[in-house]
Structures are given as C-alpha cells and as structure tokens.
Length: 433
Image (cartoon, rainbow, N blue to C red; front, top):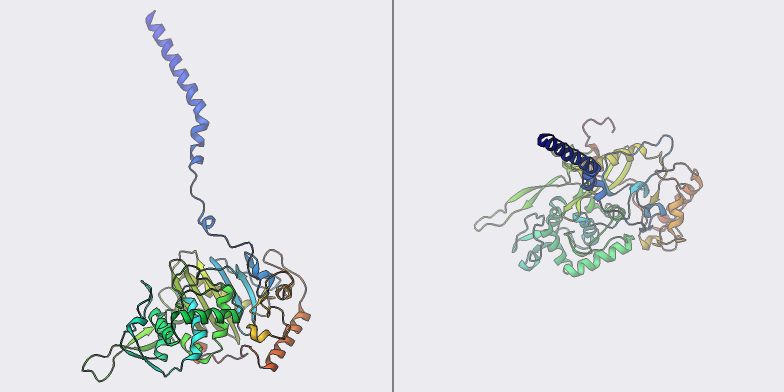
C-alpha cells in the first residue's frame, strides 16, 4: 500500500523535524543573551583611581561620595552626575561634601583661574599694549575668542575682561606674552600651583586648551578659586556680567568703536532654562572635547560664602554643569553649620610654615599631616554616619586660624567685599535672602 507507506514516511519526517526543533528550542531562546544590549552608560564611565591624593584629608583621597550624614543634615541632591565635585566653605576652608575630589581630569578653561591668580598681580591694569602678530599665532584651533586683533592697543584691564567674560584664549596669549611668553607663564603657573598645594594640577597651556598631560581636580580648582578671590581685581572681573570691549581702530575714525561682551558663566547671567543664581559672584566655567563641561562658582547667602566645583557631568540636560552646581550650592547653604566637614582646603605652603597645622605640609601618605585633617570630622562617610562630636578639634582649628591671623599669613577675609550687585541678585522662586 504505497499511499500508507508514503503517509508513514511523511509522519516520521515531521516527527523528526519536531524533535529537532524541540532540541534547538533552548539554543534559540538563549540567542538574545548572546547579543546582550550594551551596558548602561554609567558602566561605560571611566572609574576614578583607587588611590588619590589626600591633601586636605584622608577622606578626600577616597573614591566616591564623602559626606557626614547625621540627624538634621539634608541629603545630597540625587541629580548630580559630575565625575568629580566638591562643596566647601570659602572662608573657613571646610569641605562640606565631595565626590572623587582629587581625581585628576582635564580642566578646560577653569584653568584660567590659575592663570589669573598667577599673572594678574604682576601687570598694572592701566598698562597699554600693542598686540604683535606672533602673540596670536599659537592660539589653538577652535578656541574661544574675545576678538583681540593684532596691531591694536589694549589695556591690561581690557584683556582681563576678555579672559573672564568671554574665556578668550587670544587675550590669554597676549597677557602671557606680556608676562615673558607662554613657556614662562606655564612655569609660573606650575610654580603657583605647587605653592597653593594644588598638587593634582599640571599646566601645559595657560588657557586650558586640551593638551596631553594637562590636568587638575575639583579640589585644586576650588583651592585656586579661593586664592584668586582674595584679589580685589580678580573678584571684580569674575563677577562682571557684561562689559564693553574695544573694537578695531578704523582708518579715518577719531573714536574707537566698542562692542558688548557677556560673561559665559550662566549662573551669573542666566540663560534659557536656567535663572541667575542668587548671590553668585563668579568664578569660571569651561568646556572642551576632552574635559567636557567644568565649572567653579562662588556664592553668598545669609552671610555664608560657599565654593563649588563640578567636573564633566554625564547628564544630557541643558546647562547640566550649572544646574548641578546650583543644586550643590543649595545643599551647601542648607547644610552649612549642621554637617561636619570631611576635609579642608589647605593653606599655601608659605602660610603653613612653622604653624604645625595638619594639611599644611602637603604630605599625602599615611602618617602625614593630612591624616589628622582627614579624621577631624569623626570618620563618617556617606555609607556610615556618626562619630565623635569634634568639638575639641574645632577649637584646635580655631586656634590655628588665630595663629595665622596673628602672623599675617594667608587667610580668606571673613567678610569678602563681594559686589553689591551679586549680593542683591535673587534667584527666582527662592525665599532666602
């Protein structure tokens, strides 16, 4: 019976196919696991070094977030994605909280703070200078520019406005020429960083333009800003929202034209989607391909002056670096006086000589001067709050401050004369003064 035989063969063939399909089923269902989706973006982010500098305190050398949680201390804002950040009391030097504080990262134009802290005191602001063509020849391609033109005369005051407001690399190169040249200025900046104990910082280009080996850290940038803010001219320039900048002298014109430049610090000027921050008084922002967005800011509220630095946030929201800095400042103002510090902004080497202060020696190893500074807050971190009250240590710190004041050494003025304009500036939606 051929028909029956054919039917049987067909049945057997189909049965065999079904068995084979069943055998393949686990493999087929497992196939998507072999082509797993890419890891979360967070997993792709570079990891901080396991060991970092401990200048300012042992905790500041640890990776991750460092903060002393305790009853009454507000929690840190969740929407902060910076690879590295720090919140500090500008006047006492207390570090209120930090995240990878000593991670050495490209600083972008925030490095101009060190340039200004180094060079600004050397050049009289009313000195005039005619720009030579070679002074602009090595400005990096794609640099931010204020519009300095060769064979035109500018005052030092004009050029510093160009540096602080427009982050002009052209102005930086001209001022560097007036300081003895780029190479000399780089040497001076590295020496100044060493004096400030900004030991994470290495300068290759004075304007912050991306360069191999050019690095700083959130800790160092905050330290540098604190030093710069003691200079009246530095405070003036970094808090200026808008200014007039000289244009070219046109043939036949008796009067030189000017054009307006605006500060690129969006917490100072405000922008679409971001209001000017209440009490902001500078300091400097930056952005390059390798550095991402960076920002160091200073603000005053209710008699407290805080410094914040945020480096390279990963968030995609507009103006992320400013919004994250604002969130950290808000936290800092609400936490000030209630949170024990996790470290300190150290004084320059010359200030610490002979004082015996912890953290003033620049030592970074176990048993160095920073061990006491790192533990003065009681030893708690974001994962484990609590510890000693630290009252005795606080008295010792106050005593150390008095020694510094009596000797005439470095100490930030307890009442910085911040410009009235920024003192009065209110942040929309904020009820604080």
